[in-house]
Image (cartoon, rainbow, N blue to C red; front, side, top):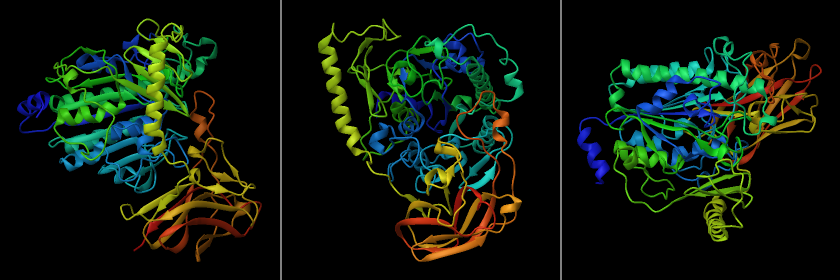
Length: 576
């Protein structure tokens, strides 16, 4: 047993600490008032920082899904199969154990709330990755934050009110119910990711605000977008405050570890401490995130840690603090930060940390950064990355280039290179959801937006048109097929058929259901993603699916009007 484990075990011999990990979506390092942003006020997150430990140089990946995979597995994302954000590339490799698996095995009640983004169908769904309960959405982003369609434990439901508030309410219900035993809650807020939506209470403060600080690349900043992001960050801060206040009120704060981080840099050019780069960039501004750890009585208040650290370190750190074991058979990339948190620093070799996205890789060693273009910077003197030192310090540049080559050789070949099928019929989950995000269609059918993550199909006008999912039926069975559709009165009555191998079922598209597009009505800044409306479930009938890979195809047999329907989702519910 390490000195840290012995220290923790003696202090908490009778009760392991509960754990709450809060992760924001697209919140940058500079989106907090404690990091010098005078455009907003984040008192609850500022207090979280001073009540425990804060990390000055904590790194995540440039985009959402890879960071979340690293948090869950303690491995660099490509090593566990996560190479993108949609079309199946966001799915965490089957068989890889998560921190939730380890905690559940250690006797913890586990729950995930909010944005998942590491797979929709079983065995990628949160309920198959160590979580006892899930409430939120599994896609990369969601089109509407006011009472949207959501997933509750694998079943489709509808949210209540503003989504971050709803996520917090569900989290508080879980904590209250489990407060007398160890629990793990992953609270994954969806903000300030677009669409830029926030209730009036938060918006009115910023609607006409004059920004006193601007983004590093100020000419590219969009002030209206920035003001919306500031309002969303203040709402997120309020919700984090609600969680922390509940821990104090229920007298469980001293035995609860609270961790806060974001998943990547800011989703726009706005104040970020003068750092170069935003979301999607491997530069400092795209990957440097807040990291706060609060554990009253164990982690001293106002602890400041300058040692470089990363999302891959969260799992080993919590395992050492709480006394549970990660997968002993899996190579991990992270290191435990527990000694730093508990004031027992250890001698360690200088480490390297890697950022990777879209074929671009950057490496940090100590204060030195070799960016994805081969330029070398000393971040301790030049956090803005304004002076390339590669010619002045060629030896360091060569060493770091060699580090990148070795890392790419180690991690990237392990990633899938071909599109993988979407799993259907897994016995761990009664229902399989197949959104059109994961489907292909004939050229005549149109996707509602070029950003696939939350779209629907429209302009389905020909019996020759096909919609199909490349699927792998992992367990044979009989299923009820349900499509989520809209249809105008004039188009009611088309006959559609679902096929797989030789099996089929069919039904008429009825009744009429033609709601307006309403999601964008709540936007504070014009969206890039598509607008959205409500959809109605329609049972197509029952279909037998035999285990194996193939195409699950939807086709119109007869068309009653100008088009068949608008389609968002196919759902298959196991009957046997």
